[in-house]
Length: 412
Ligand code: 7TS
Image 1 (cartoon, rainbow, N blue to C red):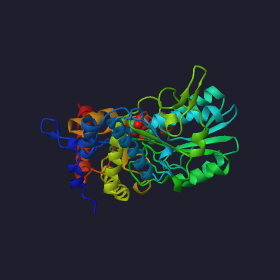
Image 2 (image 1 turned 90 degrees about the horizontal axis):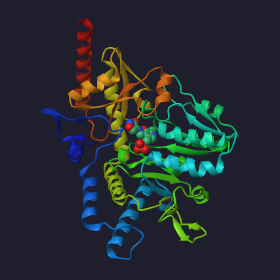
Image 3 (image 1 turned 90 degrees about the vertical axis):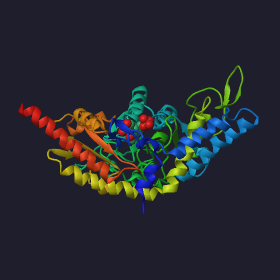
Image 4 (image 1 turned 135 degrees about the vertical axis):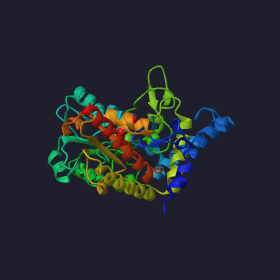
């Protein structure tokens, strides 16, 4: 049994009133998750007892900091079943991970006339870096269309893949529709035409078990701050042969083995891609987040979110004039995105905030998807390990209140 009330005790931020007498209901974990005390304490401990720069000094603290940093890498590697820690590159977030691949692998391998395949439901982080690359190289961007339910259909993917496709970059779960994509099948389809596959796992690694070897993906990107970890911690997993062949992204300290006035020699993996002093405390926090999620069990996390999503979609569909976007609960992750007839999503979010409820409104960094759906914006409630059914009930009450306010305004 997943004891959500016990889990809530781990999150200090949840136990506060956001307005006098109005307790917080946090339904914005897809934007950024809250942090359990285990993560906060690990970072506090690091700064109080271990901090020094890594990989540089031979003094005791530098060694302790290096061990803490590298131990976080090992735990992250195990968490996604990467074959070895050297295939885990620490970056700031999923955005940086994708930019790194586009700017290094992409610049070296994509040429004029080549195709880069994306889908219609990508976050800007998995669109703009490829647009920049395509513009520089004269390559073409193509987009796999969605089904009416907002899912990726394998047969559509197969129609779009061809020998000119160099890379297929797609999300494992849409941050707007919640749609879960059949990652292993999409990777295998990409490989069948000789393309490589990059998985934007920003919304999957925090919420479900992910095994990069089982998926057979070439790159996988995610952010620590969406999985109970600190901001400024993120991960690029890459297949060793690809990482080895890629040029470095940024130049500076740590990423070199040797520098002369004439040039430089790059360091081994993963340091080749970690120029400058890294976010050490953040890596330590991410390691603690991984331990925390492991202690809950990722199967349990996923099951709890499916239960909440199912409950939320049923409860929300009772609200008159409310339209849910995306597929049914069984095919989606922990979020519910909707529009409410006659009320702008920003007004919904504003009224919800008066009731202490944090939801997101806008285009959620997926403007092309919104345009495709024929809407400018939507409202999104997103869930995590601490979300309860009574929080969903509070949201539904707030939406009813919003409807009432706007009904009265129209009547007057
Ligand atoms: N990919 C997906 C699928 C995302 O949902 C996000 C962030 C990113 C990439 C980028 O992550 P970052 O940590 O590098 O910024 N998504 C959202 C969101 O839905 N609301 O705020 C951020």
